[in-house]
Amino acid sequence: MIAVIGSNMVDLITYTDIMPKAGETLEAGRFAMGSGGKGANQAVASAKLGAKVTMVSKVGDDAFADNTIANFQSFGIDTKHVRKEPGYSSGVAPIFVDSNSQNRILIIKGANSRLLSQDIDEAAEDLKQCRLIVLQLEIPLETVYYAINFGNQHNIPVLLNPAPASKELDIDYACRCDFFVPNETELEILTGLPVQTEEEIILAAETLLSKGLKNIIVTMGSRGVLWMDGKNCEMIRSHQVDAIDTSGAGDAFIGCFAARFVESGDIRSALLEANAYAACSVTACGTQSSYPDTARFTEMRKQFEK
Ligand code: RIB
Image (cartoon, rainbow, N blue to C red; front, top):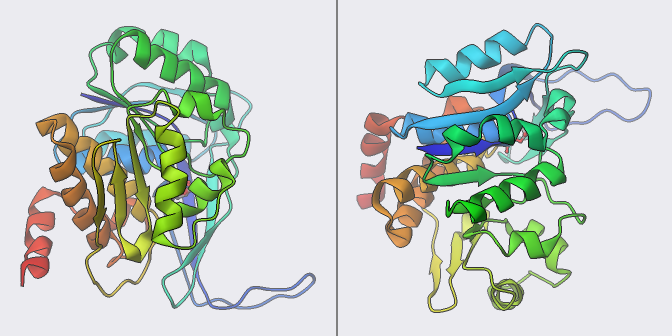
């Protein structure tokens, strides 16, 4: 089983090439609402690929809460540890996607800011059964550190996706994870080193490996993925697809990697699968709504073999 200790959000997605200035009203083309949040997206991607997933998360006491819980359950995700936080809104994320398929995201954390170490204590017996703990940074950093310690104490591998990037993240904690999965911007912010070229990305990644990190996996969008573990240094090229919405592609990658790693223990083959899964996800709109299930993924992958 995989435990995702993280956020959930309601994604409010506007498709537009224009942004209003102060005091201006503009009309945009299209709107869609969907379930999102980096933690929830990763959990759903894993579950859609057949993994058993338990979610530790907080929803608000508003109209979005029951729908978010029902959405988890519709994918077979265990919601025993998804709790409502009185007096808080659910997390929401206004997202703007342009015609180049690029996204801009604002997050309002709401109840996600109330996911605390005591929630990990309450879930402890179930967490001890897990074979991977997956974390991101849309919940309090103290909770992230507590979860890393919990994983280390109980010999459960921990994957940390440092998104959205936070300069506050204590890099020593990050280096106690088995898998650290930043994108190149997050790597730049966290190391303070340039990441314009692949050589620079490798140098920045090496600084974290030298601090004891076991595996660093840098997602680089259309350029692909870099994996380094102190012995291997491999660049996995991304598949060329017609992207229409890149929102949540990083989460698709992590959810697929988690599912396949827990299944096989083979890091490299899990990375190859995750690379293909993320490519599939950008060919459809939305975040979770763009993640294929196993049957659809198998079908879509065939195009990469041609
Ligand atoms: O990574 C994409 C996600 O970031 C969106 O679903 C949004 O909710 C924000 O958390």
